[in-house]
Length: 409
Length: 136
Image: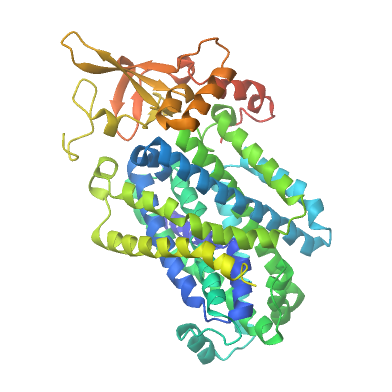
């Protein structure tokens, strides 16, 4: 019974923890402009994150080391440092976006300007990272994030023509009003949102925090192969609500309120309240995960003690990085830069940084020195290689598309 | 040695670049100490070179980064170090008791006294915040 409970808890938190500000904003934005004609990208992206999360989780369980603990050994200190700086910059940008997202959710709930919330949110995130147990962070925000299921309920309540929705999703055609570069630019953004690099940083380091062993591999695979795809369905539900309500009304998504608008239309005040809870939990949980990921990546490069499994004074430099990240994020947001814009850029720059994160995972997961007989099988390597090629194309195309479309104008 | 051999143990042959450089160093309590940032080689009586110590910290890592960046890392480290002519952290190879996905050393982290920045941050920043001794 205890085993069933722990598997169920793992899957549920994986679902609720899957969606972050990048997924919410990008899916809603794309749904409102392109309907479900880009839904295939979410499916491709979710399969990709499953393939690589499984690899990095397996590395953590078998070798007892987080994937990026091992990257420097295989890439050398120089390339490893370049990799660290690029992935850290993207993760920090995502961290800024998540904190902004929490503040925007609080503004929607309280009508108090989000800028007033920023210092409080940054302080609260730091306090949670300082004091709260790792498993509590993961479980509480993962479970509360399930409130986003309200978007799936909203789709059902809106009573769409299911045949049409399915047809739109499975026969993707670019809407006539949009140019091909714009269509591709948003495909890149969706892909970046689904495969955000921090998710695998966090996943493998979390495995070490929770002391995974080889016996935990089944649980880990359940979380990945059941939880992540169901989380991806939540992303698609957000896109579908936007496609059903915002697209016909010609509303474009520039605010978090517009992301929640279709839920209000379908389910009224109560539905909106649940959606706001979902926004808050998803962004706060992701803020904790990205904040930790910044600390993990630096500490793992330099060999510093890291993790929530030791007292803060035993991991002093790691906790200093967490503190500084929270201060920097608050400072950036207090320049009154639009958090939604930060989110849009963060998912595209995530797409640019994807090869830096995913190539080393493929290398380490094939290294018998760490993995023994748990190295990648043929299927994992075949999928991993196909995705690596895809990721490279996406990464190279991202910046030219951004320039060509003036960031999706 | 072939990759399928069991990981190298002290006193046996191992590939210093493949099995030592850049690997995580841990203490007997599994606390993380540092990375193997560089190795100290000493010429033995028979004329062959042997690894005599593991070197850690920016002083050891800087030269391996090469170029301007490496010089800069070394310069910042020398300027901030309390000693006039600082040397990198050094762990004699005789202290190493196991090499697998990490390098385990026999002495405890705090006894080594090689991570100056960690100690400084602990004493001046993190240790002063309430709850820093709080365990999970």
